[in-house]
Amino acid sequence: MRWPCLHACRPNWADSGGKATHLPVMPFPPITITERLLHAVKRLEVTTQAGIRLATGYCCQVAVNADRSLPAIITTRHALAQASAVSTRFHLAGPAGPLRESTILRMAGETLNIVQHPRPGVDLAALLHARAIVGWQEANPGRQLFSQWLDESAFFPEERWEELDMQESVAVIGAPEKLWDESNNLPLLLAGSTASHPLLDYNGQPEFVVSARMLPGMSGAPVLLQQVGARGSRTPEAFAQRSRFGLLGTLRGGMGADPHGLGLVVKASETRSLLESIRADVAGRLKPN
Image (tube, rainbow, N blue to C red):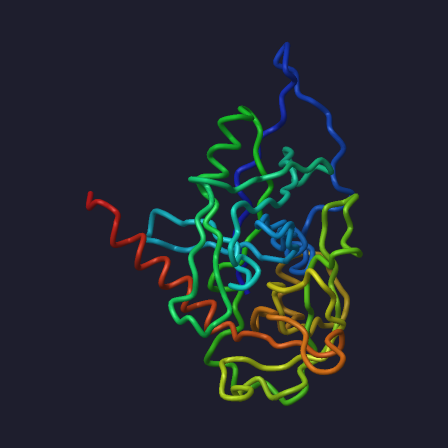
């Protein structure tokens, strides 16, 4: 599985003298798929007239054409309903990976760009945050945000869905309201399994059910097939060879009498549809060379 490259990283510079600022780095560079996903998954603070709503989202890249990609954070439609602003946090980039220090990226006004799934019945939406990143970089010259994201190659291939069994091991990566790692600005990975057959549309909707710990604030979390092979060499290539891994969908929310035990997942095919609608819209508005 090919995973997208990191954004270009530049050293942080002191405010005076042009000397590099030696800020604490994370104790490990994100090498494995799950370590990279920790930086792709974001805690979202959604401001509405009723107050702050917490949710989870994950970063994707929309390939507009061969020369341009657009960053987007995928989450649920209901998480962004009536939003007047959305804030999340990114680690700062150092010369060799993420620093411990993180910063707030706030989207409001002209920088709050929400695109909903083209079908109203599908509970998915995207935050296009390129303008917010540009604004942050203009306000913080010489600094960069550390970014990881999922591209098309990170989705479990549609042609391989027929390989899926009734019970598959999954990972749900989210930012629970009261349990997320605020100190390190990282989400939690919760293990679980599919509870309905992923090939079937649960109750006629493009969804399936997972059995895992579902906590408030995790709506919008990515759900991934998780089959990691035996341990060995710690390189991206070695991990890829030992793993069966890929995005299966987006957690919509808990269900049933015990909302903490079962969750509805919108299938990854609908995430593809959302990204494709964004790509087509943006490509249609670009001026020809």
